[in-house]
Length: 193
Image 1 (tube, rainbow, N blue to C red):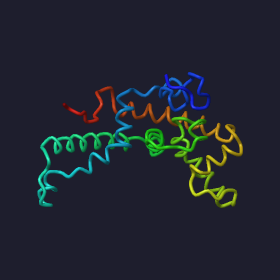
Image 2: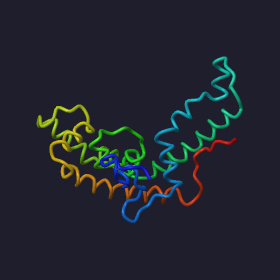
Image 3: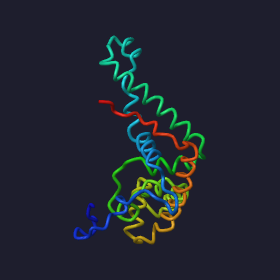
Image 4: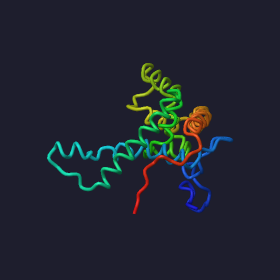
């Protein structure tokens, strides 16, 4: 098991290394795979030109495998997108914040772990950030920088309520996505050898 970054002698995992679970709600591996792929890799896989576009542009598709892979990616992305559209906007935002892979400032990463993106995406957090901007309480240029500033000044207590709110919101959103997807296999395209 990787060591905790806060204490190199500890074998305790950091929050970002813990299994994804929100109280009694543990997203299935298939749901996690689909959402991680959708928010981080799908766009890149869809950018590969189709056989028709390549032909119109005067190029040839490098292989039928690439064309087939793109079609599978388009189908998978469409399926996941339809599922996300069937959820409420807040649930979709929570899943986007939870699964979009980003490098977070150290304090946010240490305190919030995998919930950093979900906390940053919370409507209440974004509204509070706007109030802080309007009230000249911060000069930060982003919600992320503002959260880091709050943690620096107020410690863990500054974001604890939002961490709990995000945990509950992620549990609700994860459960909603599980209901939308059912219990079938993941739709993420697989690499065939």
